[in-house]
Image (cartoon, rainbow, N blue to C red; front, side):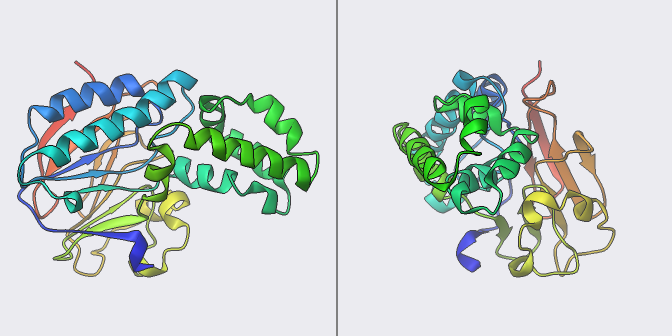
Length: 268
């Protein structure tokens, strides 16, 4: 499990970016503002949901934009590759599972469930009509396996997309234990290494946290189904501005205790 957790060195400023949901315009606007503010010595954590249910063009452009800004940040003198972390969001968890959906007990039902959670835009982004895929999911294991192979090939044809997906971390933490970064949820009764799929689907557990989690000063998440906007509580911080769903993308600079130093959004 430790291989999928990203250790981050403490810093005076740690930038976090909330759920993007395939909203290229919002991400581009935030990156333009970040480029004027982020400096060597800062850290940068993306909190998941890069792919989303936007247009095919917007979803592809969002991933390309992430790759370009990663290159820009790492190219700054004094910045190390370990200074940036990308967390796996629910969208990326579904995307990974979609490429192996032929092994699911009920692929049709699983895909229908994914459609209710935004996989349609991701499917379209790589050249496939969701309605047609829906019909394939009911044609048996052989037809589904052929489709997943085609889908994976289409993903690989977009430079860097598969590599980014395979490099995503389940969660991140500062090595002094003061800050933890998750996508959507965290079970306060379990250690980070025992969270299973709570990081993606345990939003209600996150919202129920009212006590300190081990020695952590603050747990930061990027996606919320029930509470969009900046939600700041004693031990938690939620950074979902509703990007890709009619809202804005939020990025925050936090100090070593999780206090907000600076905020930028995709809005004016």
